[in-house]
Each structure stands twice: as structure tokens, then as C-alpha cells.
Image (cartoon, rainbow, N blue to C red; front, side, top):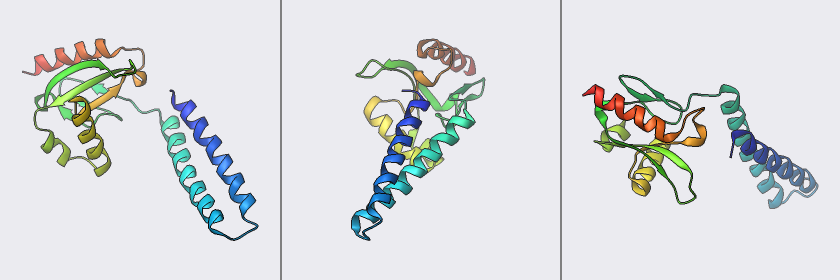
Length: 155
């Protein structure tokens, strides 16, 4: 699913929740407050997706020092133990990086990123995962080969 589709879905939910909130505003009850809380939540999520869509961040950067990007916290090649491309149970391809010391890596992360890294490590064995759908003009297999070459060259 592209970011535009996700943004469109959240925008529709925002419009729907706002309409229900305005309909319930005539009766000051719990339903009105729940609808307004939903409106605030969907507005925040919609604004987040608008910001990401307008910024168009780089999903993954690889160079001689390591990796970084919007979907990958900075890690040096010395911190990375294993690199592979893999498919999930739906057949979507991902580029995965397994870390040597994932605890030290998580200590540098924000709580949200730490939770994601922990969940990825438990479910797939890779602590940093970048979906192929976010990689422009590149496949996960090609980037895994490039990453392995950088990793081998770094020593």
C-alpha cells in the first residue's frame, strides 16, 4: 500500500468521525466526547502522514560507514552481523539486518524505535527491517548484495 492510499484512508476516517461528532454535538453526552477524541486522533495521524508524504524521506542509505535512513536507525557495518532479503507470509519482500549487539543498539534509540526493533528481532530475527515497497527503483535482493559487499569491504 502506498503512502497516498494510507493517507486517503485516514482522511476518509477523519471526515467520517468529524461528521459523527458534529451530529452528536447536539446532545452533550459521552458519545460526543468519544467522537471528538477520535477526531483528534485521526487528525494527528493524518497530519503525520501528510508530513511524511511531503518530506519524502530516504528510506535507506548505505555507504562505506554503515546504514541509516528514515526506516533504519544509523548502524555501522561493525554492528551488523548478517544481511539478507526475505519474504513475509504474504510474499512481500524485505531487507533485513541482524545486529551483533542489539541491546547496545537499542540503548541509542527512541522508545518507539526500540519497541519496533525488539518486535522485529523476535518475529523475524532481523533487528532492522526495510520494506521493499519503500525502496525506489531497487529490489531487496539487489540491495542485500550491495550491503553484503559494503559489509565485506569494511572488514
